[in-house]
Image 1 (cartoon, rainbow, N blue to C red):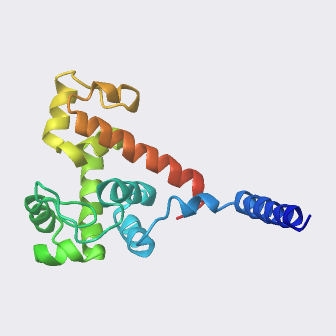
Image 2 (cartoon, helix red, strand yellow):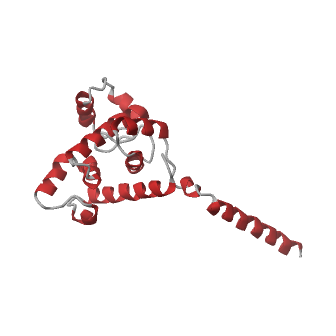
Image 3 (tube, rainbow, N blue to C red):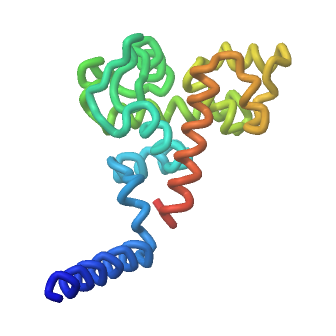
Length: 187
């Protein structure tokens, strides 16, 4: 009899916990957290880039872990290639930063990555799908695919992107973007 009563109490506690979890509007934020919100927000406002897009790219690139370096040499939260980072600093007239600092300093990496996203947005006339693809494959390749009719730059035809890595990258970034927009009312 006591065992049955304990089971009922435990079941009631579990059901209560689940109800509280699901009635709380932010319960999904536990599964889709966004780190470095202040840095993302500041750079988003500075360069007029959607903060959810920045967060989605960081999520796919490094899952918000600093000091990452890819096999190809991309560094930091937003996985910038060293040559691209140097080009960004020159073009944006951002004071020089060592690559080691860029690798470990989230704020500076987000600043350069966001500037680059703004630049890609201008190159691709605000087409976010093409912009995301260019962030992964490079703007030259994406421009070539669009120019040669291999891909039209739209999300509906992402399956036509000739590089599987880039195709999958675009799909993942857009997936996380949609999740973040759905979960968080504001950034």
